[in-house]
Length: 195
Image 1 (cartoon, rainbow, N blue to C red):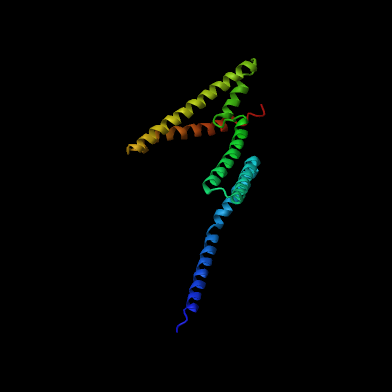
Image 2: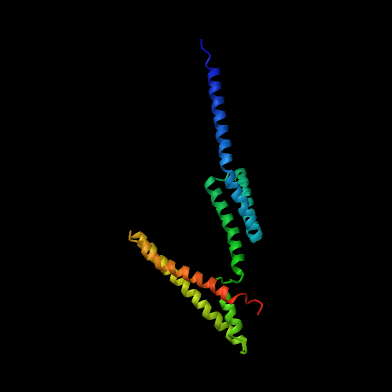
């Protein structure tokens, strides 16, 4: 009589060793991802600690909901819906807090400050500064509308299998030109905060 149990145990051991080797290789492959996540969390915590708090609270809430759902024997479908809803509520609260702060425009911000400070000297600044802001905000709105309309044209060209690159060339040149103009305006005007 032949004993097959030793051969079977060797197969199990080699399979277990292969699984452990694969798991260790997966762990080593995920090290760059984990380092990236760590750097991201450090950058987020330095820039906006409220977002980091919301991310940590959302993660904690997902874990708590999972534990409670397992104890109550909640179906996986409902457990997933509750977790998504909890994260959505926390991130919505963050976005509401984030958007409650006033917006600080980036494009032509220095030029707007320059014109507010120089064009309004010797006049009633209470009446002319809002007019300067209105002009620059209208320019920014027109710029954004142009980008949106051009993007729609590019998407339609892609959908119709047309030459979308030639359609996208002009809006891209406009974006580059406006960006260069804004940078050069900053160089020409300099720092206007001291005025």
